[in-house]
Image (tube, rainbow, N blue to C red; front, side, top):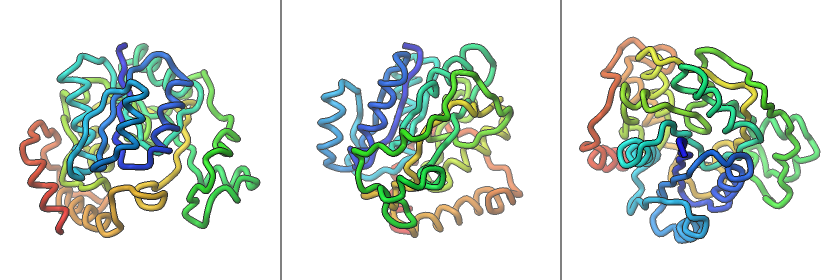
Amino acid sequence: MDTCVGFVTYGGVEFTKLLVESVKRTTDKVDMFAVVGKVDDHDTINYLTKEGIPFIIHHTNMGFPVGVNDIYDYVWKENQYKYLILAGNDIITYDYAINSLIKQADETDYEVISAYQYDVRELVKDFPEVKETFLGRDCIIRDFSTEPWNKFKGGSPVLELADMQMFDIQNLCLYKKSVFDRVGYLDANFYPAYFVDNDYARRIVLSGIKNCTLLNARFFHFWSRVLKQGSGGSAPHFFEGNRRYYISKWGGDYSYETKTPELAIFDRSYEFDAVTYWKTH
């Protein structure tokens, strides 16, 4: 295989199962690799073992950026994959999505190719009959067995391109190795998750990396599982802390940046100390 689908988990094995099952159902062109981010998450470990999916385990909560960096090392340092498709742990891939990403990568010089989200809020709006499946404004799912996401039939095998636009770079997004060679790792200071996508996207754009979104490559997103769909390894105060760090790093809030820090990160030696610091600040 030339392509690996990588994902970071933090509990919620029901969501992991849906992701894995959707990948296996919609493509035969990928391997998979996981980072188990929650300590003593035996449910996820047992499931991944049963499915034959290789994984590594974090023995303390190191956060999403460190998990993705572990995926980068597995895909491009320990192995020789051409492409990484980074997938969120709370998504379901629709038909054609992954194969479209790979086709676009094979046939063009785009280096970052994002799929296009369809989230639970859109689902409830478009199909009011599924509203009772979800609880409250946060749309917390009550019953997985009803599979309400299957109401949506918007995927297509016909590639539809949005040039130089990245609508989502970490929920279902293909990266060529050239991206890692130019900008490297995620910044682990964005613990445990928030604003790291903004930071990485800005580094990609300022590095001149050619990117796009495939509007036909659709995936379902449960939306904010980290905080609202059960254990996610985070808490609301981290959002504001990461926002402050983003402003200090870039000289302004998102879309109001005034500084350009070093765009490439190739050193991981600081990660444990950074995570330890941000856990208590």
